[in-house]
Image 1 (spheres, rainbow, N blue to C red):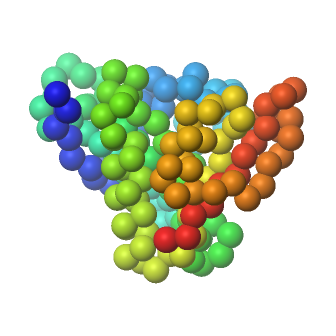
Image 2: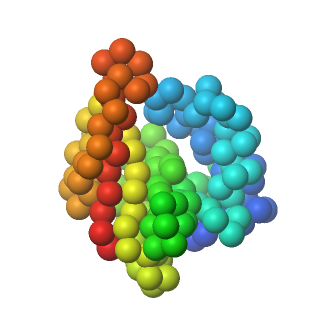
Image 3: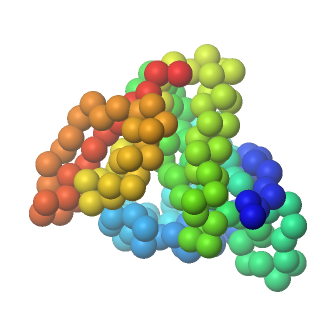
Length: 167
């Protein structure tokens, strides 16, 4: 049975749950976000409820008070005005390992696109890496197309693939 969840924008008060969620999925990224400049703390500070960036989060309707994630089961992060005033960049997308294959990432991306379209953004950019075929397939199914590949960018044999989509 699909979990009941709602989607909302995060606020500064969600800092701890956002940080814990990113820590949970850290090793799904290559290299892990904790190993990149500034680590997870800097990423959360730069992307949480700022004029340029924020996260949309899928949060369970029914959640345990003891849940350290506060019911967060998926999250997409976005930076606006990335290349120009009408573009955005998806800087994070992940679903809790226990809640994958329920369409949560798809719903998060669709809601983000709707939100950006309401504010007259025209293009969304993102990137992933060649050792993540599931992400590549997902983004292509969502209508994104690869426009640039940087060979060996993430290590020997691991390319960075840049995608974009007109909305």
